Amino acid sequence: MPPIEPPPTGWDLASARMTPGDDLVALGADLEPGTLLAAYRQGLFPMGLGDRGADPIGWWSPDPRGVLIPADLHVSRSLKRSLRDFTLTWDTAFAQVVAHCADPSRRGRWITPHIEESYGRLHDLGWAHSLEVWRGPELVGGLYGVAVGGLFAGESMFHRVPDASKAALVGLVAVVAADADPRRIVDVQWQTDHLASLGVRKISRSDYLDRLATALVAPELAHPPGPVLTDAVGAASPEPAENPTEGSAGTSPRKR
Image (cartoon, rainbow, N blue to C red; front, side):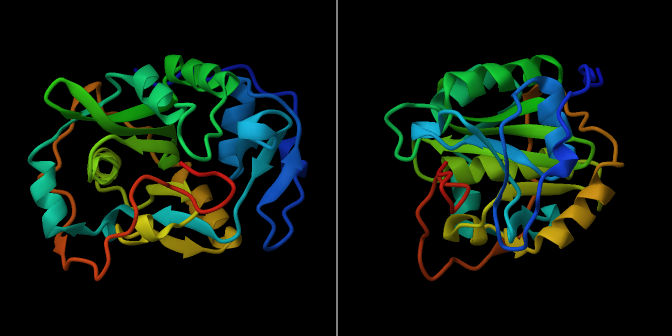
């Protein structure tokens, strides 16, 4: 079923001042579904500026931006072996994934109850999605984000065992790239060493906005809730010289 378009936002997000090199571009507004969708369509995403993500709401447009082109995904031989130990699913435990990402014990936690509730509403409307990583009956990793046309905007990821967040990204690419539409992109906001090892590149804000405009006219993701197969995703690449720390999907005030 296609996602449901919410009432439009009453905020003029297009007036956000995007100074080259500045990541924070606006303050205020709200987290209503219409506001969030309007923001993603203009290359923005929210994160609170207060303690542990509290208000006021900041609207961010990193320059440079961390982006994964699905064809760029690097899957090492060791990660391919790890994938055999996991079962991946799509949209079967959204609330659990967000709750793990919002765990108060996590370093740099920024996901507030308000964020959890707002993205839960987007999920109910069909815009926000989760990728779950299971080892047996246990949820050991995952990520969530927002899909609009050919854009998947990653919001946060977590892992309980080694390689689980990497497996989540592999599973996400399997979903995003299922129709081989070259317009599709995965926005990870900021590049980290961990994400760079998987193929994430840094691009300028202007380049990102150009790619976003192209992505938004692609069809919405159509993967049904349930198992995700990764057999055809990512050619095995050489092992990295170092094993970057796993788990964060952004290098900025916003730690995953």
